[in-house]
Image 1 (cartoon, helix red, strand yellow):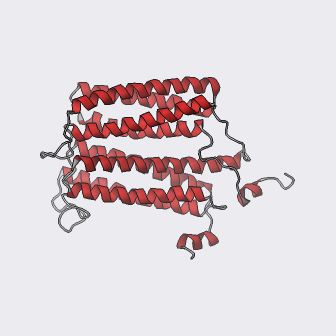
Image 2: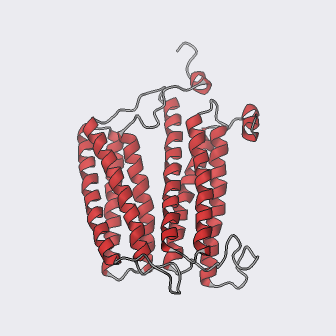
Length: 324
């Protein structure tokens, strides 16, 4: 059975620019979603709209506007922007010729994660900011960020393969790839422990008393800090090995990753010593998104087996000279 997008793909084609901008827009807005959640939390605006999917009563927008209501409603509007960006990415991916099935599947995975994240956000509001649901909401946002990054990377891998006529990306030695995977796992664990810091810490997401996770958050902060130091050390070691053995692109990515990790560590240390100021906490939430994107990009460029492009179709062949 022919789907609407399948019907459109038989009649229309979108070029590389649409794909590049669509996947980039989805990635940027996915970062904004993470930042928006952080702003909502530190300003105590989680129940600024006390119900869901409406904001107040049966109204989609706040009936009696307040700062907290405007912030929470604005965060919900970011989801609308995200839906538009992901739809753009899906359409642009499907209307490429030849079709790349992996790319379209990655683009569609973003859609399903947007739906799951929206439902989790709604349940979180209805459950009055239960900290475990808040943590789940953030984890789903990181999942969305992951698929957005993978879609963005896949799109650029395809476009790069056309421009370089199937030039195979160099691959790092086995020990370097193993370290890249280990660093990725440690980074993910660092982010997940960060959700426990949030769930047990003082920034509950609302100005009223909200149930917190039942453990000493200062202990979790120390564990989070120690693991953060370990991740920085692993990233530095990965950068040194990549600088010596290549690939050069991955080595450049590793420099950026180390820089973001150091900035993130500095913000984390500052907020811990200065009583968790709201701006620093929001920046730390944003930093977690940037760290994860940076880690994924290093991993993808270190292990070129991931999303490798082996063959392209008519557009690639048509770009070659007739005597090639």
